[in-house]
Image (cartoon, rainbow, N blue to C red; front, side):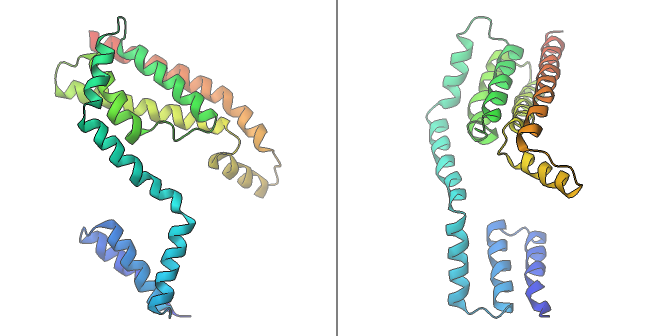
Length: 216
């Protein structure tokens, strides 16, 4: 057994301890393990290329983030604030409850990437929540932004299990099969519906209580 292939772990630990760029640390660790395993440089580069090609969908993130950055630079957050400010009766609890419902429905349909922290909460939902809440100080503003982020998390977490092809459903199915319990993914997704309703009701109540507490 060639234990030198584990040297990549040492490189990774040292890199993170020295606070080196994480992407560079992972690349160096993989290269170290590959060379220790006897791969020549060309085979190592080929392995990197194959891994990138097999997971090339991950690179889509690097296309979305610059677009969001450009939109923010050209006034996306200001437009979101002005939109909410112009709506009568647009309170913070109503806004976040509506977003919670939308997030749960889209997640239940398998559209988990339609919204999210980076692409929706930061550039759109958080500014709209701040406009609806009109925070008194910076601490209050941080609480409002935190509640907006939490609403996205709750909607996604308790909505995605309704979709039968989501990873969590398949994971539970595999675990139950190991215990001798045979269930179809549809059976698990059906039982996720009451949980989703309960999560919606509980978090909506939290939003209402949060709004009332801020008013006092």
